[in-house]
Image (tube, rainbow, N blue to C red):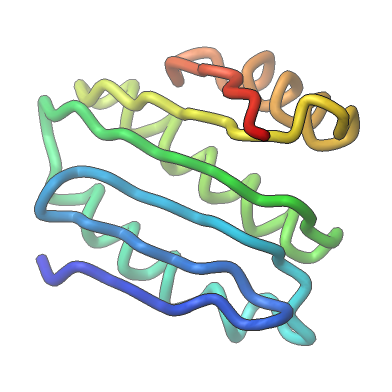
Length: 127
């Protein structure tokens, strides 16, 4: 599986999926005009990777400072996919990075931890 890297833009996060190392990163801000068009190929690549990945430790780093409601829907689908991967024998560690003063992002991460209990969730405060 080929790694996937999409550089950040003003309204789109950096996507750095190092499938070869089982490390997935989303960083920046996410409010693209058409979230489905932007995330479609990302989700397809992730789905293909997870379909062929078994009994593997996968690390996911989410470092989003802001995301809009359409991005939220896509992110929830990604977390569902990762949650399913964990129930299929993989160990998925989700590092949720957030500014300690950003209660909204911190609370969203806590909701993810409560909703997707097979993910190993770590809240990581960043400066």
